[in-house]
Image 1 (tube, rainbow, N blue to C red):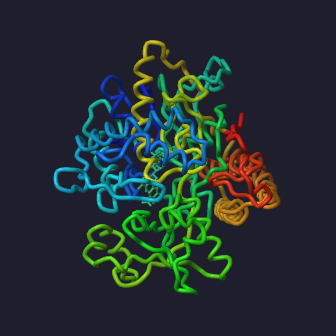
Image 2: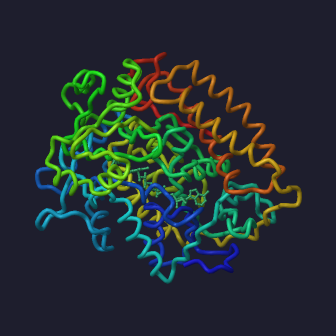
Image 3: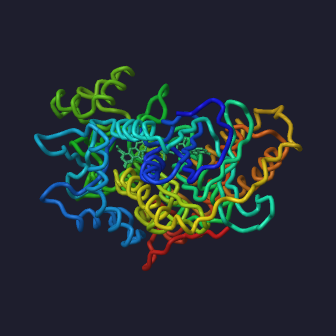
Length: 533
Ligand code: FAD
Ligand code: SIN
């Protein structure tokens, strides 16, 4: 674990992020080299620990890779790269086996792993630990990393920017990545971490929206850092909204897993008392892919002037509900909702960032020395809409792939040159923290209202106008005041918002998660939106 005196330093490889992607990469790398894992806040602060439903893998004799591939591409509205989809899905059984070996206590059915079902899947193929899969996965990976002599875990390091050729003492100006500048949240000092290779695994940008199931730190830091350093990003307009986030005035951002619908839950319009999915997707009903269900709920809410819709599983036996969803049951009981007897009020909320740093099958980015894995990337797996429970899987497969490529090329990676220390000579302590809070709130609100589930060009242009105004203000603030985690996140949040809106403005069609009233049809040929810095 972290020692209090650690103050920057040189390692063989740096991993930024301690979620499923980062820890998987670290564990694979540590077999041969010394690795430091940096994370802002705590080591369990990412989305991984929050995952509920599970991990998709073909494990049943009646299921096939081809069907999982087809379901992934149908959900992704054809924008997926087939090569990536095959790569990930064929490695899923191995990834699950690794987790079993690490001690993840997946639910069993006799001798076999129990498989639940989620929207868009034509088979039961989701392995899970009741309704708190992510926490079990996070704990198993963390315990293995803590026990590994070649891994140094450094919590409380808020990474600011990548160290590249621009920061070498003998300026080379190259895009080669040598590490990262990170704020030590305890001392308030900025430290330099260098390495032969760096793996970005910082998760998504969900908190750019007012309502999101993602944790507080999902501010797109890695995507923004890689973009500023010169890496391309792709498909940032593809923001996934989960159909069923709890609607409650005290508790915000609590997910009600898709597995509730997978195990028979119905969506009901509280005004009519009737199920409504048959109007939107007569065949797949509540188990249609997320984009379809989220738009259907959004439409019902708007048409009937509702606050929320209802998700009802009370027709299933109470013991069945309690044993499948013990954590959700307990949480709701605490709020006075008994899901075995009454419906759960739900609304859609931002849930997953499908776009991100462009990577190849080895997790390589455009920048020499920089790899990326997990939700901060666009690998080609998800296309225009992620299939449920394919995300943890992507983290596991690409964490290993990036580590394997780094080891395969190890002899070609030079040792980092001397780099410049962070210059704080021209900054002072901020006297107006309220500016950060105000801008943070403003971004999240206009992103929700103008760049949400249903878009128009006019609304996107409005959002871009607001972003351009805030850009100058936040950059000026950043240049004059000492950095804090809040300020680092605000800068990245705005950068992520800009990438999302710019991408959305470039896509003149509706496909998957990008639905615009101005271009309601899909183009004949699916094309990625690739932004070049
Ligand atoms: P994360 O787990 O988000 O980890 C990011 C790491 O980066 C954290 O350690 C964070 O501290 C660190 N970090 C970020 N910025 C910085 C910085 N500037 N400096 C230093 N460190 C930084 N997917 C599924 O497949 N199945 C599910 O059932 C499922 N359920 C979900 C439920 C919820 C409520 C949510 C929010 C998501 C769910 N997902 C699910 C999605 C999935 O959990 C995430 O996509 C996945 O866990 C992302 O893992 P990751 O390793 O890429 O990033
Ligand atoms: C859920 O449990 O509904 C979330 C699954 C996912 O995001 O993949």
